[in-house]
Length: 592
Image (cartoon, rainbow, N blue to C red):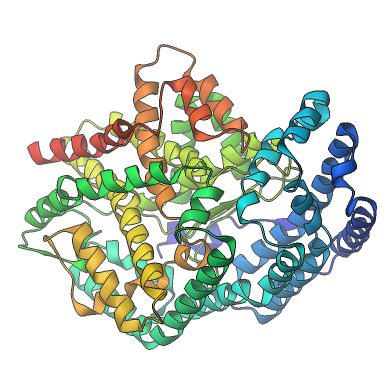
């Protein structure tokens, strides 16, 4: 790492806005009071929900929301501590302990949503019409009640809830800690996952090749474990899906995302149909630029020959993103600035830290935190723009309260991808040099292919794995065969995939933590391309509409959110509109 990117110069987050420490009185007091409040809530409302007046029902939801916010603060703090260093056994023990205690406390609250789902539609509508306080929670009640057809008996729901911490959550933790502790030997150096993956975008082809070989060696050494985790979690999901009568493995994700399966199918079909016009065509161009007949898989993210591969210091990255945000809206830049003025971002790469990047909303009474693994690439700048977009969204949506601030994954990716788009467009418009413009366009196309094509390929991989798992356990070799088949179809003939690449499915955390999450990225990218076209052509008023969309949090569905912009994701042409933006960039590169 260069001196300008030394870890000591990069900011780390301060979690004391949540709690002063893992053994702090404030944290222990919140655990105690939450347990007491949950018991009292159960004593007051168990078996009584159907008989409550409208105003009393509203008061019950408000009391439930208050308890949920405190529990959310506790788990946000525990989760962020854990993400800071997954290799520290004391932190891992603390995280597991908080999971167990919060699970025990929240077990006393499960009855509430189950009883809500047994309410008669007509009776609930009458209550909502008679009480403004209850009507405030209409979106939350709507979202709770979509699970009605899939709800099990109270005893089974409670059992599944209580066993989660030693079931799916435990397998998630095993995956996370295994991944965080992996090391890779590259040119005599022992590196972590993030540092090794970063070498795949180095200018030196030998470094890329060595990094790919190191990744394959370590992945293959741990492949049986990763295969077992994948098989267990896929079977666990199959069992629960069967009990809940979900027709397909991805149906529960669509329901959680408040998006119709037909809309996702249309997105998937549009992207798969566009593979030849997007990834296949672009990688053939890139191979020609690099003087190769085919790109090796480790060359996929290689810089172009003209690229100087400049490292961007953290301060410059911050200023680039904030200026781009400010061009769109001074208010957006002001909110973004708060993340830098306060210790809300954890930036440097370090051993044991969670890989990748994320924005965690925590709870409305606090503020979001961002985690990055910043190494100075232009892609790292775009990752900052992406996660800061999430952060701005989470700040604006906090006004909806603990029960309604969270946004479905498909729409949560809108603000993040829009933040990337603003940053990219600002950089592109300020660049007059044709060679530099080509580099910037190529980088953007690669990012968009990674967001759209690669994520839909991930979705295809998951669909095949979960479908085949129903016939029995999959070997690591079979998982690799599925992976290579999907990658070959999506990347095209210009990418050479050798057998070592067959293990690269194993480090993708979304497959483990959030099955079928991945299509949300493609959804968000195509949506933002369409949204940006509206912004570009709008005379005025777009920023206000955009902020209203973000402030809505989880209260509105995609049709309602996009209607003010004249967009409709259920229309097949919508996805073509988004994909055509990527095609136009490739057209420009092809003509350069």
